[in-house]
Image 1 (cartoon, rainbow, N blue to C red):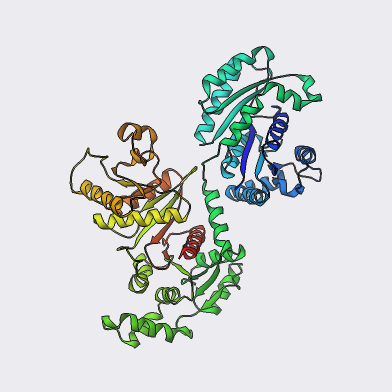
Image 2: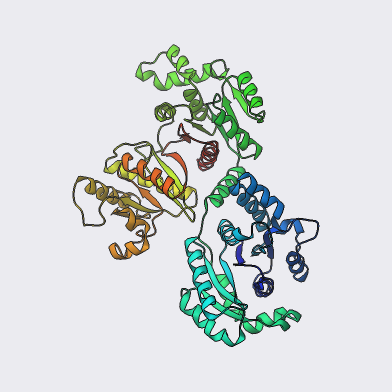
Length: 562
């Protein structure tokens, strides 16, 4: 992944182009393979002026079409259909293609020339976060008093904090030359210690040589060093999904979807096949599925369709199931009948290696979906219990919650296994596991059987996996909030920065994930079953098409790791 920087202003006519040019000069001296990108440009045949200037001035060996995300008209189209996430995803897709060619990309925000100019500042901050960019923000100082500039600085600081943006620094441009020292002192007093502040005076003569003017008024060495040392840690839901989809594409897996009679499953299959993410088998009657796909105006002809009740695999699968379960007194006839069930047939496909994973549950209960996996896929060595976790995609990070779907009241040993499995799931998806073993008490302050269960589970994790960072018992606020953690557990490696949250029972976990999903507008991906020898995942019966798509992608990545 290349390094990057996003330049944005709060309004038009801030002199952003001069600052962009100055930053490009700084960065071109610090990295060999630099790129330039604009999330949105004006529609029409005329090239964007800044792309043209930067591309020619720095000999960028890039096509014009590679250097912007969308045109104004395209952006307006996304707004008219209400597909804001689609808009952000389209810009991210274009940016990621450019990222493959560059070591560093400078991104210049929009120009406040569209029909959506009142919305553009928030748009720019959202784009910066979705591209994983630290920000340099620009305040317009032209014809503004010190009090007005101070207010603008404070408002911008507040908005950047609310949006969870990573800021390199803030520049007040076109300021009164007599107030430069005062403005820089205001920036120094207002911004956090790790952010730079700079004021550049208004000078109409600078247009003849803007680069020299920038160098004269900015400490370019200090600014350049700061830019190269900082990185945004923000992970948005759109960014997380993009990474998942591309990872699944790199090593395509074969996923079976047993519920071919559900429209949501067919629509999800259509989306997955269109994007070439996985290979798919759908269980059901081929003629009925093909007919329904036509009615839905979707294309799934690249999927394999199998009817478990009449497929040539049935006899082989029934014999395999009979051999695996005959100690339970099952007959071959009963095994054959069992294999006609789509959940059993799909799970047997995974067991036999005819599919890499299974996703079901849109039209079946959790028990119906996962019972076959418990019977013959079994758990991984060293794992005593199958559990589940959710990826909770907040606006700026991704957390792992477990167990929220499978085990009603795990004992201490089982809770420790859930924690270890959840940490392994986090690692599989590039999330550094810092495990919070949750309770109503933090540290040694509480007593009682529930607290002791969590305390014992924490000790088991430490003993069995000493390399993992784990803390417990710990309350949720101490696990997630740095200010609370500083008071309650100041020396903890986990408190205030936990990424994996282990709930003491299913009741607590299920309530909490749904509360966070609704109140924080979080994207919940899961449940992801963990601990099985091969990936089988369960859907909620209220799932959306997007939930099925995400779960299939998660399952494919799990299969890559097996």
